[in-house]
Length: 71
Image 1 (cartoon, rainbow, N blue to C red):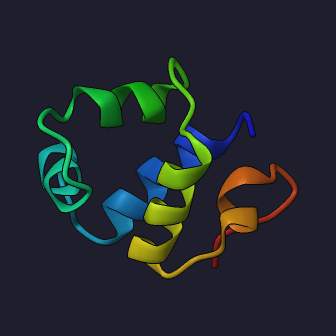
Image 2: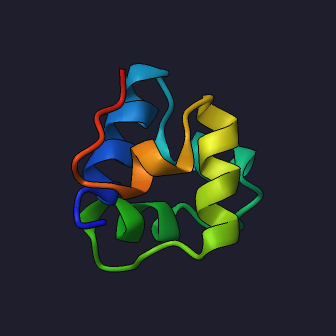
């Protein structure tokens, strides 16, 4: 799961979202947590990983597994 943050950043940028916009969409009060996720300083809970996967229309496996790519 070491590539989760990289994949999250890639998805966010691909969809033209700022960290603030993604934080709002995921119902966070601050975009700082998104930055922490993207940098690898924090890891998501399973519930959050599912929420992010659903939001971007990818699978949790694609996000969490380092050997899975996001199309």
